[in-house]
Image (cartoon, rainbow, N blue to C red; front, side, top):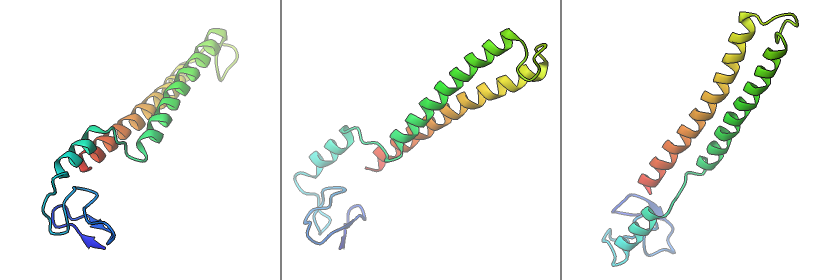
Length: 123
């Protein structure tokens, strides 16, 4: 292993050029270093967890929508926890459940975007 003098990346001995920045072992940029960096920045690289978090976030938002619909149907038929009437507790708990799913989904998607942005800038 050798450490790139330009970016500090550890590179295996069988490579003559740093795979992170395109510099040679002396730390000097090669002719293809600029092109190498441009291609890396232009590619839509995502953090390994980014796609998973986006999927989880989307599922949470959809789940919140489904729960919201179920709650509305149950509230129109009577209370959720008491069969006779809609109580303030039914409404508050229902809103908390819907809000939780929506916010959880948005947080997951936001974290995914932050991870992807930082990952692209690092690369």
